[in-house]
Figure (cartoon, rainbow, N blue to C red):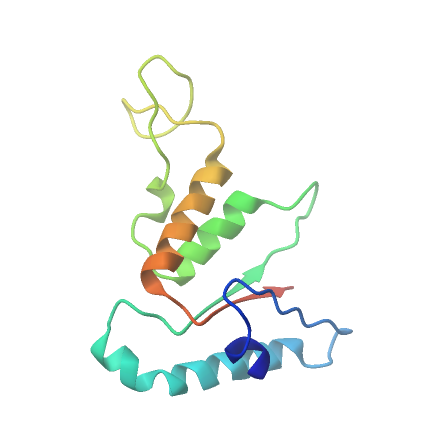
Length: 132
């Protein structure tokens, strides 16, 4: 908890260890402590969330899927319209989306931007990522 509370903003704190040592249990306990510590603030400020906690899903094939990861973060924050956090481009460009709309192909960057904005608005004390 000291590593979270006493660190500078945007600091990364990493916990490493073999399977079964208690990393996920530690993450769960940190979540509980942060929620309890912020109970008073949460009662008066409904926009703030104490912690964002998400699992980073390992890829079955290929490389890590950042779009999927960012969508999971947005869902955990309960951000509305997660699947529509894509910016339309000018007419005539190719892409996918709603009928009549065309979207950029770099969807991961758009979801990353949506996560950045959601975190600025929701102001969590910590973002916990559990690599499963």
